[in-house]
Length: 178
Image (cartoon, rainbow, N blue to C red; front, side, top):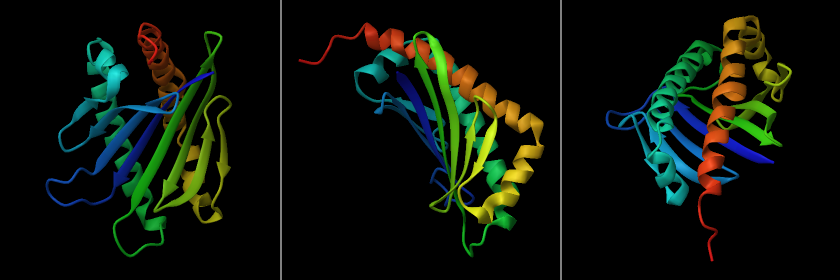
């Protein structure tokens, strides 16, 4: 099985010149792209990053990372009153998709607020799991929003799965390290 994983870190507040959104993208657990909201640029890392940089997917990916970052920040600001913290809050989100035998075999979202894992969404069957019971109200709020659930499903099963298929083609064209 192959996987593509997007790790987002969203801050409710950041100093001028500091990004409020950072993202790292991994294929099969290998980091190959980084993004930050301050530059709104995706930085390629390693051979796969350089190969992907030369594709038409690059612009689409840069735009989507920015949009998802903004959407996740709005979610964080919406739930901030429900989070027990005195200072700024941080939302870490992991979006994962998996492929095997030319089909999507897994798609999920994991949400961590201020270092505490709290919610998991299995986008294949749209099942929410509460990991931290203090965040069950957040789950109920998000679950009621059918548009949000469709958005998460489209990103993880649609876009992520499409990019994984694209990137696998570039990885297979790469020589094996000796």
